[in-house]
Image (cartoon, rainbow, N blue to C red; front, side, top):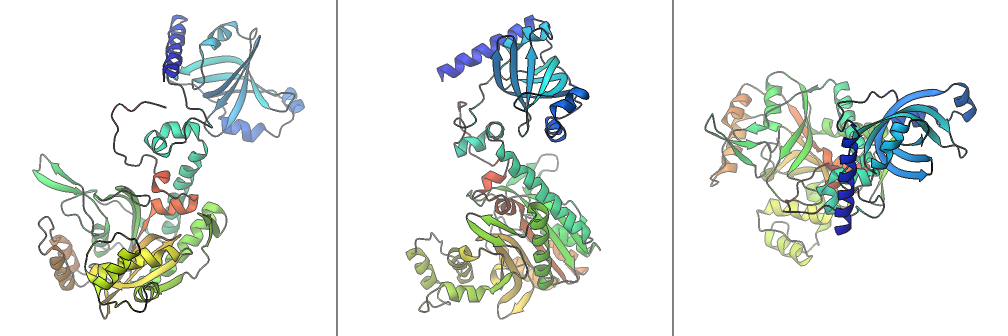
Length: 488
């Protein structure tokens, strides 16, 4: 730590020297004619002879990645995080610029103007004719290969993670592309992208604990949304037959490798359709996504090959339950199932029978759903917004990929009286639970047969980038703050 502090002191001294030389320390802009990416892609294949015949004058900028001094010459590597170009200073080319060079450090930003050539080893290089100091790096950047590998520190200081581990950027470029392709697919199917409230007076659309806040002017308790579902279905009532939203949702619950309190969902609704139509659409969507993002219908996730070729496997909840539990377990005896799960080492709370059914499926069956699998026909008790199938089950499915739940969907319950009964039962004996009467009123105006689905975008990105933790695909995951935390 003492060594680092000494190096930082030297950097401050260099900064003050630049100031004394009259160098503009924080210029407003630098005009770029070519990015480092454009230089690499457009001129790499051009020979030195061609560059000599047709010299390329250009202006570019970036962060100094390396400095190599050779007497009256100095080489530096300029980087944008992905692409790197060598720049070359000659003492007699511009004495004023040469005087500034000793004050530059790895991590500083500079802009350069000059001519492009190739060295004897064929490396693209800019002979610098003029340069402009753009910004000082006062902290010592972590070493690329040894200085920044601790996962927690990487997530806390993502900016240093991106600097030290440029390959991490590819995850977030791919994330952006995945979200864009979701939009492209749904727009192409005639869906309308909409926005619904993040602040809600009643948190609905899912069974989850919300974050609570307060509006001073209105003297009103509000909640960060746990799902956009009820507002999207209001829009279907209002005549938008195909709607979707890419939303930030918030749930005041646990944090794990698969859960972050703030997460991104794609939710969409299709009028005059049922969950079979949604399963077909979902198969088409993931095949499209795989080909557009990866260029293939297959990928490797945590060492296992996953294929997105339809049709996806379909398994009923009751069949999955029978297959994952021994024959001597009574499916109607929750204690039998609970004790069996605990004997197997799973920490399962005492709940209702149907909730324990789903715990058993989640613990024992879902890890085997590596290739895309629809788990269908859920217990009615745990699906208060879904349309009944009969015999205590509903038209609902969850999509599993790589052993993880990726999507949840069902035929929407559109009987206002039945929905009212289910809502009232849901809030029975619970102090902070309220019935969303406005949603019930909306249903009374008529909701056509509708199917809706929510897809966890963060988990999709995990699958498509082969990451085993949700923190790796969220730029700034929620972490408990540490006081006076030193930099590496």
